[in-house]
Image (cartoon, rainbow, N blue to C red; front, top):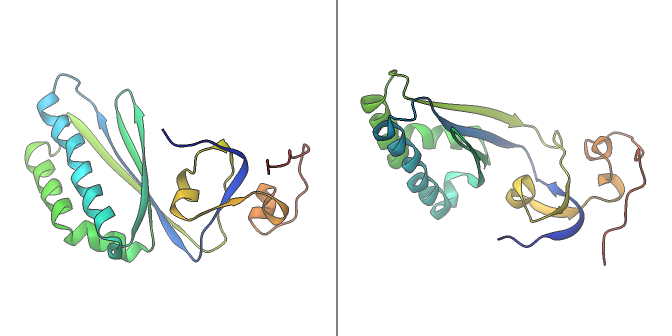
Length: 169
């Protein structure tokens, strides 16, 4: 279990970055032989990515639902993400296997969304949380001063709507 850090924090990212959301949805619960290999294919890819930071992958988090799993991934550039998708041996093997064994039969769905985030065009806040999400991918910094409100984190003006508690010392 990750250690909870009391107080309000945000993330600091240097430069632009990519948020890549990828996941699977079990459409036919009884088709275990179809969706279990899809679910198991992600771990080897993540291991490969964590072992090879030069590929541009920064971090990921898992999110479970009753019918599937979603991963939120952070990448340095879209070009690195696309290169891995098209040339990463582990990914290509899983992609080919999915197309051969599942294809379009409807037993299991897969999806992804890609967001290109220009420098300074994001905001986030983590209150009494472990280092998580974008703060884990970048730097975990106090949400004070120019980082106190969502507007300020986006480089705009904005006063807090309610008083902000002080972070513990």
